[in-house]
Image (cartoon, rainbow, N blue to C red):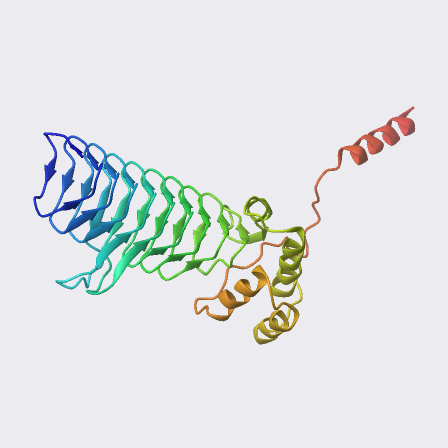
Length: 285
């Protein structure tokens, strides 16, 4: 264990083997840090935080702050953190709002500089929250989701497994699993194909998800019929998780981005442009 002489560590804190505490860091009472955690210069770990092993708390991060809520009770909940997480500079994580509950972060997550996890947030495993991302109270993020920089997620929203949310997006409804969200519009623009391939999903599984995507966003079915069709056509694989997620939502779901039906502009095709220029030159000659 290595504790800098300028750190403030409560004698009531419980620190594991190999913990490193930097200068001017503060570890309050009722804190438990597992083996080989590191707390960098100026970081604050407040009372009510339990963290597993091999976690990294960056410079001036504040872990376990009081929930930001105008009706905050006198007694609040805790923060529970798993193993092998990285919380970079100025990250803030707030305690849950009610006693007996917790703001939870799983294992192998990476929260970049100035990321914020509000009260009662639940983050799964292997998630990434990029710089300046903000998760409001009660947000749930499933495994392997990617939240890009400066994304704001409204309270009580869910972000599904392996979803990717583009930078600066404003998320006000649930993002279904495996989807790709455009940062500018905040709308769905297809499946997160790259993420699916990197995570080991087979071509058949990806094709099933493409078929399910068309059922959800392209057929124009009533919502009850969407769920019934998915249930009838897909009984195994990742599509069953998509169905489970869609069946349990109560905030609505992010919509697909589509061009207006009256739009006349289309993408330029270089070969067609060259042919048109050649035709004009022949007429002029």
